[in-house]
Image (cartoon, rainbow, N blue to C red; front, top):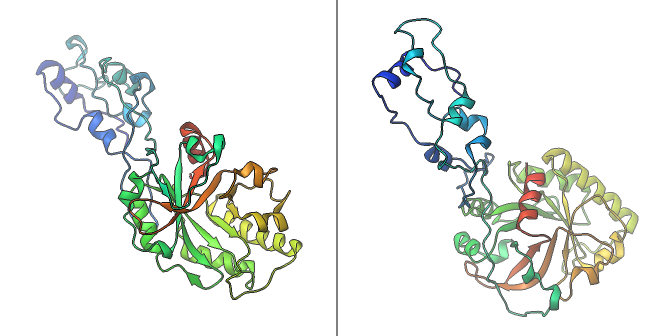
Length: 339
């Protein structure tokens, strides 16, 4: 909230009687701010923040408006009740802040260093995912009850949560996982497992019906792969696959205002996606070699490097993923893609 004027009597009090404010300090006000404003399903807890100094010259308008004004010299304070009492501008008030006062104008998502284990570790050599800074996980009902605080502190900075499958299946743990991840401060997103025996429009509407549109959420994901265990045995032609994917992706983008991410595995990619969807971000499964060897022509945002990960907060195995970039690139990507 911005204050547009201050009664003249307040300044007279400050200059002549030495009145002092008992309101909250700038630090108290900023400590209550968060970039994690959400509002579709739940109220999320603000994640820990990294303090970064900023001079008073760089204060945003809404903060400068809350800085106590500098005392007005007695010679310029009109008598009580006089009209035209001077009101210091927000900028002149900000200039009066002592040099040692510093604040952070924005809140950055805290990144935890990963310390995951692996039941079947792979030596990726110099291209190891360990060289990348921002790790995360993906989960579904098969992870059971998750201790999200422990999982995050063990290195899960983001999570993709299974939401829907086909046109009528909702993962029974989706709502609990969606809420729990937010409360623990993870960046969260939802994914849909495509079922080749239902239309794309049906599946898109089913996902939209069950996954809330929440400010700050990661872009939605379309998971396309061949599933040998599915009751649907159809394997559409490449042309049909691309047509179905296009319908689904465009419907989600119109609804959420975010370009969806495509998740896929090596065999499906070779059959259908080589050279396709160049203007979409990809999340690639590659658990035996670096993606550059398995998908040599494809840029990627996320790499799923293990399906046998081990972590505190989860019983059994969990999928491990990493973001393609450093900490600064991660924050830039979040700003550009999560609203």
